[in-house]
Length: 213
Image (cartoon, rainbow, N blue to C red; front, top):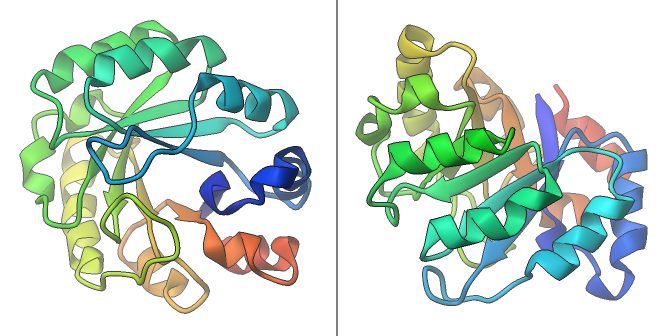
């Protein structure tokens, strides 16, 4: 299991310290939540702050766009060369075109599904994706409780990707902890995003290791 701590839960007064800490403590990716205050009722960070994160991170960035006008934001963040850029299928009218645009920058494209969105809706996009991110909370704020029905959804998505594109990773974001990590693994999940669990733990290293099963 790969672990991508979400910097949304970091101490923004000591952002460099916290980003360096999770990288040194063995995380696999650094998850960055970009919210525009329109697609979700929260406003987070832009390219200036993410650029600073990229400079001190020794692990690849995983940028999750929770925005309207995805193309604008892809163009804004592509110069930072993250490993992944993910966008919400609920917001995008031309997902295949945007997938191609992300890949044209040498970045791996990913699609995000909100808790209510069925995995079948991206069946015809799966062959072009490097990852699918399943939200296990309603997007917008950290520290929410895990929605158990996402496990059933992950199993369905796992069946689809094994038929269509076995190399496509499944990522889950929201309420992840050592309490549900084994169930997520059993459902076919490859990557977990953990914010509060990692950054509020007495030992970030032990928190990360407890998820790398």
